[in-house]
Length: 80
View 1 (cartoon, rainbow, N blue to C red):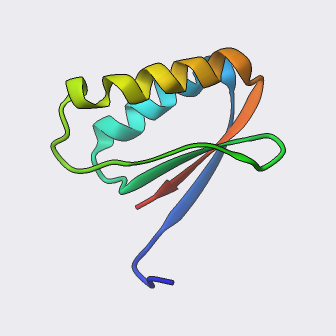
View 2 (cartoon, rainbow, N blue to C red):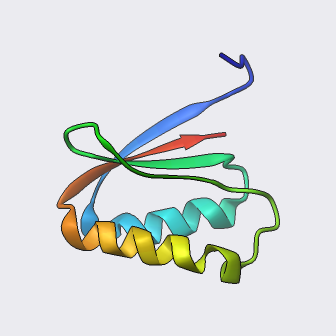
């Protein structure tokens, strides 16, 4: 495992999921975002590169929105 890799986890409800993911992307210091269900199964995993335009991430945000509609509780894992 890379010693410089930092991992953060947040438990969040589905209603706040899209907003939180957008905030993480705006911060610009995340390398990868993983969204897991409350049972620990991975729903979605995507890399976040510096300078990625919102147009490129629009399909990802749509997928996150679909997950948010289905999930009542989930975990966001951020690799920095």
